[in-house]
Length: 448
Image: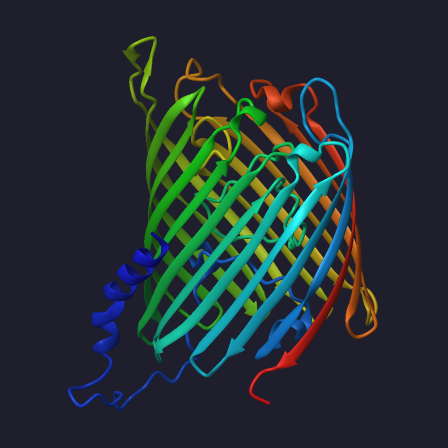
């Protein structure tokens, strides 16, 4: 599906791209003189960068190594009696960062294993894979694509967990419910094309696919698999170098299903107007807002079909991001209908995310990230319970570079989730986790 989405969007933009050349294939006589327009955060589909200073500028490297991690969790399984456990993980890692004048590719792959002291029956073979591609198809047409896949026994078992990824957009991006130790598969893919057809005007299209699947539903009572498919088109106008205004149309298909709850499907249509300000090249401020329409179908209950739930809802939000040499700060908030992230259906959600990355000394970095989410599941509460509730999470870590190849990271996470109708979370809603990670990495420049 991800490959088909890429091909479709490329074909949609092919005609405007070819229109930039004459019959002989030469460029127009009067190319744009102003800098290339940016794709504003409300419609880019990308997260704000987290690399500090020059780290984000280094490219054309092959990196490889191995990471060892251990964590103590005071509530590993959920349920009425908390069960503490210690886990051990090992991840061989390889990463490729290659950049040319028109193409930038970043690929990371880290297979591994996680072992548990007390709950050895839930030992897991892990998979962490991500790829990001930015391709300048022509001077004014840019294709971006990314895909991330995690297969693990816990949402914590990700190499970048706690890195503070913050997105400036809305819709489909509801953070998953933090389930107890249980095998799960999480995939998130996005592809977008932007075309700057005039000096200060741009159009674009994007598609997103996400999939959350619990491999053993008996271990996550009350939670459901979820799939999100969304597509959007936008128009952006730049009245000056610092100011961007525009409008975005978004369609979503949100499906939740489980063997005990059944299936719920929600389709949404939204029109969002946005404004982004770039006071400097490293600072952006964005706001967006507009109406959102939803139609939720929930199948049958007791042999009788449930009526569809139709509603209008405001879709609003904003974000701020600043990337300095020694400090990165990002914050975003959105109120919109999005995927349930493990709940029994799509939800009217309030999501707020914040991240701070700080270089304390030349070899010591600190990271703080937090998240708040409040969900009101759409449709009839008779269908598998209401599942309404909220989540608060926090992660703090320190990372120390010990020599050229060795890195040590210490961190702490706390998650508090209040969902009274989700049995696996209701009795013990809080999880505390302390972790340590040791990474041996080597890098080799490409083409030198």
